[in-house]
Amino acid sequence: MPTRRDVLSTGAHACTAALAAGALGLYPHAATEVQRFVLIGLTGPGDPARASLLFAWASALAEAGHIVRVELAGDAALLLRREVADSLVATGLPPLRDIMAKAEAHGIPIFVCRPCAMARGVAESDLEGRNAQFTNAQVMAADMVWATKVLVV
Image (cartoon, helix red, strand yellow):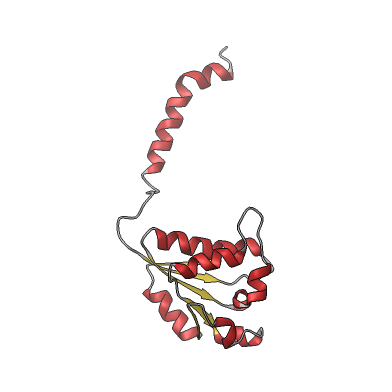
């Protein structure tokens, strides 16, 4: 009777390779055309990893040549308060302030739900010096229609 090692060292690798090769066609590694992304952040300082990944992914998409917008609603509006961004560090990631600075350097616009921000004490002064502006639900909905892809983080 063949052992598991015998099976794996013979035909199983060929089957696995064939399955993997077939799956690769389903997930292309790079898009061939520029796409429009809207990344919607709903998570605030309560989950530093999700908050940080929102801006890290936005930067990665911009670096890949795509058009990117970030929209913040709910507790995510708090991320624009400097004392909040300066205090958040997710495990395995740089500080949020550094990740946000990189996104800002790419010129990624940040749209913040005004009612969400006002309810959480985020003011116009928190947006100064950033590529950020207040908006409303109607504009955010229009951006979702404009986008090729919408990601909610």
